[in-house]
Length: 148
Image (tube, rainbow, N blue to C red; front, side, top):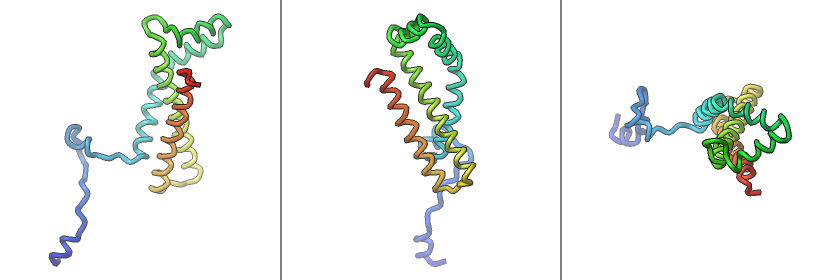
């Protein structure tokens, strides 16, 4: 090969086989579909771990009028050792978890139903999933914290 051919040849992309947490992860760029996939798993885990909190909220909100009053008061005054703002933050995390898991699940169902598994479509649907789930979380979080 000539010298000009070797100069114009594209630099080979790095191959990550065994990722070192300290050296490789800061420079490793995960595509949006990978980010959505990881967040889908994390949101499922968060919902599973907060299941006792969900059951408690459901029970308190539906038992009686008095228990509903206690339920709504928890967001203002707190509950036991947890202040009200911490309960609201945990609830906000639960809201994000549910919304992201739901929107990502709809994305997977849509991809399965339409057989659209191209790289470009996966990239764009992942961006849409992130935007929709975060926008809905901000909207419901603003309602939770009393901004409207």
